Length: 549
Picture 1 (cartoon, rainbow, N blue to C red):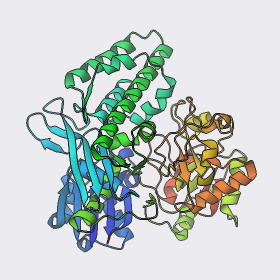
Picture 2: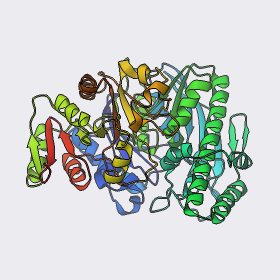
Picture 3: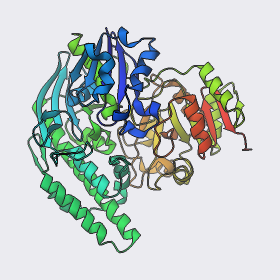
Picture 4: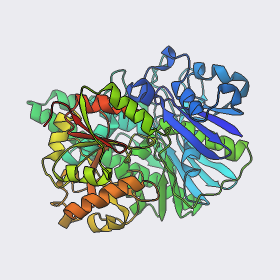
């Protein structure tokens, strides 16, 4: 049975093809349109490029698909070609399926938290799901409870916050302290990165702007309004730019601290309700890697799984897998292998060679016999290196196939990459990727972080060894590299370790500021040429800029 999942909301459109239970291909619309999170594209696109992409990988046309599972927040124009085979699935149910059916657990509690999901009551002020609890096993997903909140105004915009929404609260603070994309979406990832630079002066104030109950988070529209006014008032009273920056950091600290408190409260309630040792997380809030690690440490759950595309870009995956396991009647059985996030289409050597030929005047090409070993030497010498291999990753984290890599031992590397490569704020941290069997030597956690969704502490004696990936509070958003998932990345790390004694590299997404992660060899070469990267490894080819010596 060939099942096409279509997902997203007013952003992060995505598609996934599942054939007889196997995930054939998945991609996010932004990687193809080159518009970040594909925000605002729905009304202008008459068909989803992502759907054509995943069908093309399998050599299929729309008529070859048996069933289309579409997230019910999706723009309807995306489904017109499949109208006779479309079934609609709830937003939170898509999220829940995406994390349970990619987990290693035979049974698990499932927690979905985001800004808002499917509408549960239209009315004058729409009521939408914001938090949902499930228990999942081979029989599927059983709802255990939910929280829903209303929109603020009748003529609401899609980016307006809803009441009773943990994601909505984080988004609200992010916008009010200045992290807002064109079109109105907030940038919560920046808030999470800024939080460790702040202090606790607003923690008590923010506590007055919501309440917690058994399995509940409540924040009224009036409380949201007062929170906005508090932030605006504090910023208006700032005497200098430095004062303003300090206020912004302190509010980032406060909302991060309260988000950790809230999600821990909800996870503990779910643990008590289910008695499960296992927890699966999804929804945009599950991209908060700091809160995820707090749940792992303190919730009572012994094991945790977060799908790598935890935000709306994972709902196509969840929809397709739900179609196979639940609608198709195929009971869920976890795989003994970890879920692979590398689900873009394979890139052939011929495609790479053709892309290089199209940029022949701008690049020099070397063809080393041992590309990982050659790249490791470049990195050890200080070269900021693009690393483009195989199939692209799903989700917002670069996991070693579409990455920019650098030497984490160099203290100035963070500032250099932020300024000359990523062209972004100086406070933004970078993540480490470490060989799986050396993780505990460098980080205060032995739990594998395969998808860069946990933030443990860097061991105190290693912080001076890898300063470029140690955040200001001593933490790091970790990725664990395993030969099972990414043998070539492990070969690179091992080669770097042999040269330096450090099995860690700085890993950040292969893109410039406000650009989606690169998908194709041409995308990679264009980004390489327009930024301050020193080298680009495309498959087994090593590129440098024609003007460099």
